[in-house]
Amino acid sequence: MTRPIAKPPSKKWRYISLVSLLIIGGGVYFWLYNTSSDPVFEGKRENAWLKSIERWDGDPQDPAFRAFQHMGTNALPRLLAAVGGKDVGLSRSIMKVNQAQSLVSLPGGEPWKKEMAAAWAIYFMGTNALPALPALTNMLFHTNALVSCTTALAGIGSDAVPALLRATTSQDFTIRLAALSGLSLERARQEQVVPVVMERLADSNMLVRVEAIQCLGELHLFPQLVVPALITNSDSQDTLVRMATFAALSKFGTNAASALPKVLAACKDPNQDVREAAQYALSQIQSDPQSRKPANQ
Image 1 (cartoon, one colour):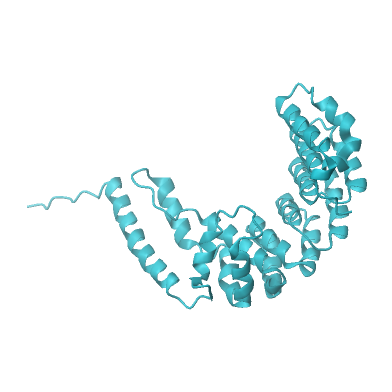
Image 2 (cartoon, rainbow, N blue to C red; image 1 turned 90 degrees about the vertical axis):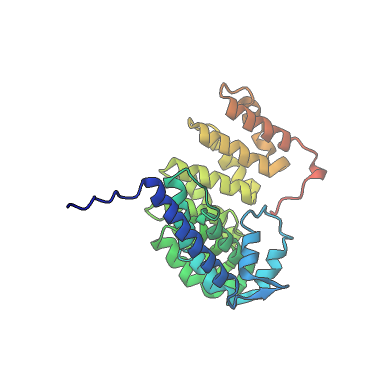
């Protein structure tokens, strides 16, 4: 008598089994993670502070600033692991399961949130994160953790600026993009940063040119040098370049008054996106000088 051949489990049941394992494994993981000897500040562990800045809104008064400055170098090992994507394995697994099926959406499947939260944490630490400089520099040139590591580097200060500047001339345009993203947050050696960023206005890659324009807008420094360069870019044939240019000019406020003829002309541009960017720039350039902070230079 032949034995009946067992049917393989259905796809649905395979997913249910996998989800169950992930839930169990995740529970163990998070229990270990939250009961470990992490640095503690004001009764909250490092992991809890990290969770609180996954959606950081840019507020410099956020309590997490003080938290990570207080934790110091004790927090760096786990933060570096997260920035480099080495401490988010469970989140990646959950993400893959969520992408592969529609039966259930498991929480915690967004590894990029933890990577960027760790990057902001290092940024908050400022010069206290200097011991992380070699590891972050290596990530910049040899991994895919580009935006997270340049964000972290930007907070370290003067010692990290040379690595970011060197990255703006990389043959890999994604590294150039990431470096400019980090430099838009830079608050050290800005007299060196701005000229280097301006060189990227002539980059062979359009996305890098746009990122350079946005970076100059975020820094809004040295208007006598930068505004004329931005005015030249306002004549670009590329819509994204023109939109970014007017957005950047708006950051300079009344210090971009010399751009008014170009801005006024663009307010009648046939492209709606360009028109709206120019109209917003016009409102900022013509705003009351007393209502704006003075230019840094």
